Length: 158
Image (cartoon, rainbow, N blue to C red):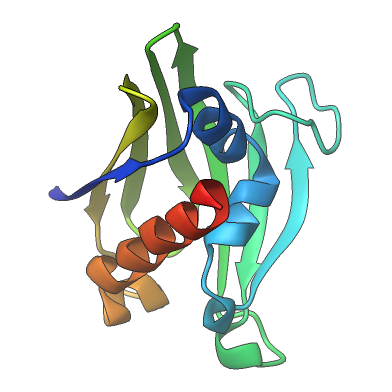
């Protein structure tokens, strides 16, 4: 399985960065517009609709309509497989349960660093052997995560 990693420092409090990434609105804000992300449904661990915080076992059903096209080219179900938080650190891991990759696990790590927060994304993935390939596989992870990190700084550093 391949691995992609990217790390950054955000000049914003650990609490603000953690809260932002713990909500589906954070995912929407950090997805480039050209991907045409549509959140179809969000369910909490007990099946409740639209939970405020994405806790362990929450599910997000999404579709991607690249470049504003009328037909979804990818459907994707992501499950929060793990979530932990302390005074100094936070971690959550989402896993693809249905979607364009053979395997996908995204580990989001947060660490208080001075007045700000160190953020690390680690993605373990395997491309499909056949079938549709995600736009991420075509464009590459680096532009996507560079965008996500730049947008995080823009939105949280004010």
